[in-house]
Length: 309
Image 1: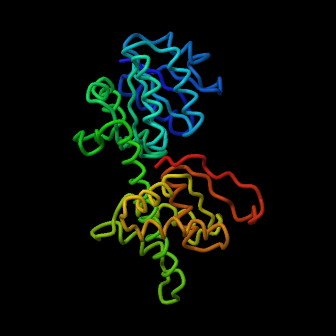
Image 2 (image 1 turned 180 degrees about the vertical axis):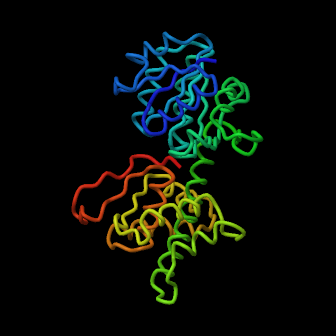
Image 3 (image 1 turned 90 degrees about the vertical axis):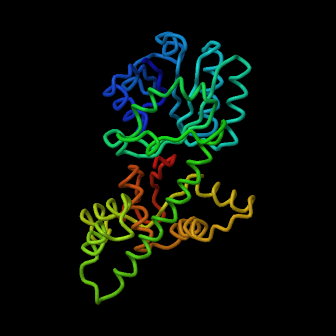
């Protein structure tokens, strides 16, 4: 199978590598010519055979919308566009409708796995018609983790359902990270406990709080036991807010996720060990930028532009 992949940054570039390793022929396009396999979107489309499948992996909002609009002019009836970025689910219906007018299919796919996905596989959550999802199934199978398909891939419903599910996934992620972070701060403050990194490592087997996030917390503490090298500044980039907003709209109580979101707001005012831990976790699983201590609270930083967990 041969597909087009637009956006070859931190996530897209790793996805191209994983797809090629699995035998999928990938034609990539990126504004950075050093990364690109094609000179333009038109050139990318010209290198594919019908029915064409093009995966879009660019920032949510206008960049995705503009890319979809341009693809609508270049692709043909029966082709398929997959949005694998972190678009808001409400944008999916608009993008799908634009392409549907031209007979082009659309699938929204939430992607989790961060910088580790290239080797471990990506968790995939898709929305769209059965026919469109099946057309791209070889791609999904190449990207997901090894093992039963249902343990790394789900077709959650119609267009928009994939990104909605990924939004909730990221909201849960906010709460999990905050719980680990608050536990870290409490252990750090208590003089009675003299081996905080060791405590987290001991939890990684046999306990009810073991998880991949805990493993990443252990890794972060092994590299910097008191997280002295980073500030406790944590960005939020949309999906946590959207999850809380949906909780309000649907009268679903979300005290944990809401508190985790608001804690990130607090992190921009006061440096704290807990927020250092959250920042370290985001860096570990997604390669998200952290603010170094030496920058100071008023210095420019480089927060990530999109969640990639």
